[in-house]
Structure formats: structure tokens, C-alpha cells
Image (cartoon, rainbow, N blue to C red; front, side):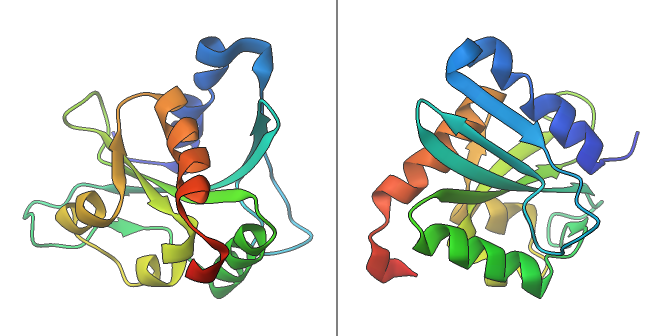
Length: 153
């Protein structure tokens, strides 16, 4: 089985079960503009945006993860969202199947330009946060903006 963004979305939307009506989440398919995040939502009044990326695990740990490239427009969108005070992250799925063959990393939105250069799994773990459930992915995305000051981006 190959890692795909649609699988990442299927996993992420499981957060609805954890949070119930306090969570609004949807996947956006937008052919009109480029750069908009794949997912937007709100949890108890905190808006968030998540860009989904998925890549297969390479045979060697020193090899970078090949996922859909992060476009300049996606970095610009992330920067604008963060400047406006909302939350943004990149959710990167590595591998497929079940844990530990499939892992998820939340990369803060302000690291979009860093993520444009493909990274190893170890680098994703170092600069991001590994999450084990979809609710944790959303909570981590929201927590990240609260930890940053507006001077950080």
C-alpha cells in the first residue's frame, strides 16, 4: 500500500469522534486558487488550517521522504494565516499501514519553507511533533500557535 494524502485525511477526520460537536473540520478541494490548506476547521473557537502531505518510507533512514512538494503559495498561505493569529501546520504521513509502519508528524506552519527541501524521518521527528491520534494532531496544531509570539514569523 502506498502513502497518499487521502489516507491522511481519512485518519485525521477521525478526530470528529474524539471531539464531537466542539470540532468543525472539512477537507477543501479548491481548483480556483493555489496555496490554500487542504483542511480547515475550528475547535472550541480556535481556527486552524492543516496542509496534508504523505510519502512512502524509504529503505534507508538517511533517505529523504518523497511527498507532494510544498509549493511557494502554500508557504505564503501559512505565513498569512499565522500572521492573522490562526493556527497552521503541515501534517506529514510517513509510510502506510498501521503504527509503526505508518507515522504522523505535525510540522509547525512557520517551517513551510524548511519543509520545501525534502527531509528525513529523523528530521521530521526532530523539528515536528509525532502524533498518535487524529485528535492529538489537531490539538498540537492549535497549541503550536499559542507557543509562538507574533515576532516568530
